[in-house]
Image 1 (tube, rainbow, N blue to C red):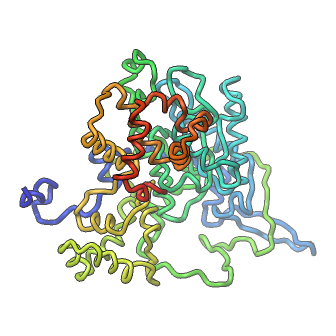
Image 2 (cartoon, helix red, strand yellow):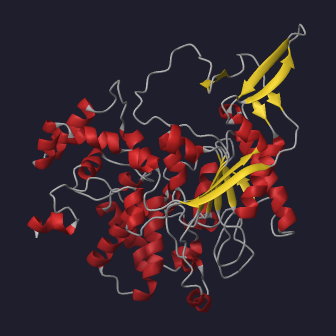
Image 3 (cartoon, rainbow, N blue to C red):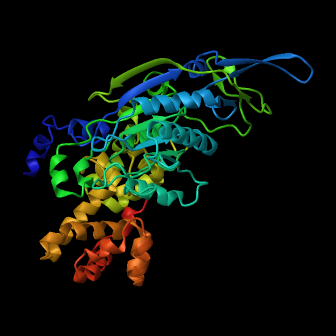
Length: 483
């Protein structure tokens, strides 16, 4: 059986499959490539041009000046409320709807800054109130950024379909009342919410790892019947599955990473003194210039749509490959892995590949590049690079593995309560607050817990309310599930 491993993985030429990327996941039917909506307004078209958006001004002495703004300046030095309105209108008009209720699909919008996020959330709420009168109370879109109280908990509530409560479109269908989270960076890395149907990049992106992370929030598949509580209705919607998601690109980010970004460029440390930004032959405004706000109307200048195929995006093919190539090119490291001397192999990676002047690899950077929602170990990275595992498992997949081990080991007899036990198992591992409440015996606190409530606990057979936490403490390493 071991001799046949290469054939099993389609590597008859003795060339192991080292990587399991988004492309592999799409080809194997586990993940989804985006349907890209590239929409550019009259103003953003100028911002993205070689000359930029040129503004003629006069200084305090009456001298005429010309200031040129680029995409990087949007909502930092260049402000245009009309452009933000066009972004929101286009997003709401063309975004995917929830197939069960017909309401706007759950979505994430990536903004430039916290102030920009607040503007976008307000604009979306005003527009939603006009489209769906009386359905929302300024909670159609919610700002989820670091300056918002309980923002981290809001991300959990959105994933658990309880942000701002439950939707009123269908009482038997569990989905979040809030439909859009507007963030800057909080929901970028490793955030797992499979029922996301729309992503919007209302900002320019220049880091390939950031771009892959943002795009990755929509790639998970989802069965909408999982959220239906009525058995009859559940059977009716059993065939409704997430087969696509829309990526709204308002700053030509996809084009940038496909055609313009230099993947082979040697990155250099920034110089201590601030340098003027150069793009297409113009400089950004001089230091001290406070910015410019335009009140001219804006509208869509061009819009193109395309489904990304099995070939994926160039950024998917390039990212994470460099580290794996370097690891496999190290003969000493390859020998250690072949001998399965993992302790020595890990030490060599840390000493010889991490935090070096040329590349600055680190465990956290590689975790973010891989798009994981949990901690990653150096050994896992090596196992994947050298073909011992096909891909990194997500937090939910690892918890499912642990729960299956639990069922095999403990053999609970209450077959009709397996789903409830699974939910308890999941909540206890994932949420430190739930874990502390259970361990301290302060069960009444579950009455106000948005993730796992007292009703959920009561549905778990009494003996397993104690045995499940004991099992997890004895046999499950919680460290690997931390973000």
